[in-house]
Length: 238
Image (tube, rainbow, N blue to C red):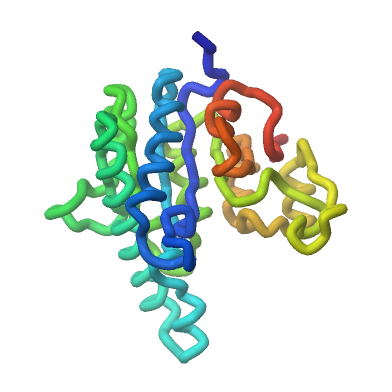
């Protein structure tokens, strides 16, 4: 059996990863696909924390265009992440993986409040912890929430799962000749203003020397390769 290089990872998923073909809503089929990928990583005895976005349900910038208050728009997005968390937890449970959904905004009827030490204990017992509600505060992205939670639970690696297989010199969908970086320093990523993760999240990881791996979630076995330490995607580190 292969031995994982990273023993505890935080997986950051955009809400679009759960979306229907039109990019919106929650697709049970997509939730099942992601659950299968997470299960393969758990089979390598890796502890997994997941933080989800909400772009498949609510995009705060759409509300802002119409004059909505930023805090209200952000709180709506936080609530939407909890719906995604519940959907993914259900898919994992149906595969026999024990999960716990925790939320940064208390809603005890459907999820535990996020408590750092409780989350760590769940991980030590082999459960997948899915954290919804972002940071619990407006004006912060779910990328920043992912970086913050990764630090709090002492993760070895933050995996940013996207639809592209790393960071490129240009958008590879627009320029097929764009070159992919295998490695970047935190400062290089900040200076490039890489679109896959916001500057606040990268800065937080830099201050705490937490490596970030950007990869294509839909590339076969990509998550397994990531935790095994194989060369895949773009590694952003010191």
